[in-house]
Length: 105
Image 1: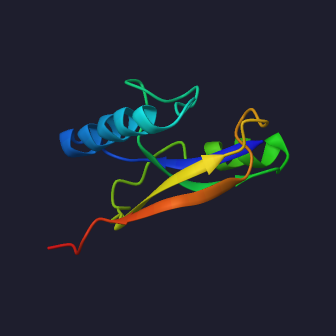
Image 2: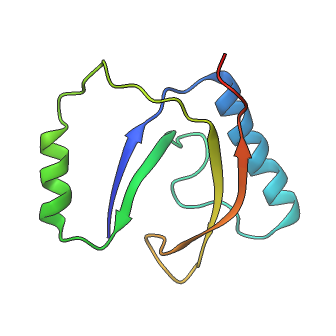
């Protein structure tokens, strides 16, 4: 399974929120951390998640190997998703919670 994502600039607020979510989820549920979770987690915006042939994702990586620093986006919502444990890497996600980050000033 391939994944296309855009890296997000980490901030202390974002890292603190990530850590808080991990602590609060672990206190309420079992097995909440994904294999890629924790201090090494890289913040990102998932663009595509699917079953295309590897060549499709390799072509995307090559075509975007030189970042365009003029390209920016403002994330106004974040998703807390759940995936079935039977899939590795994770399969279909279910939207558990969506948090609005407020209006951009």
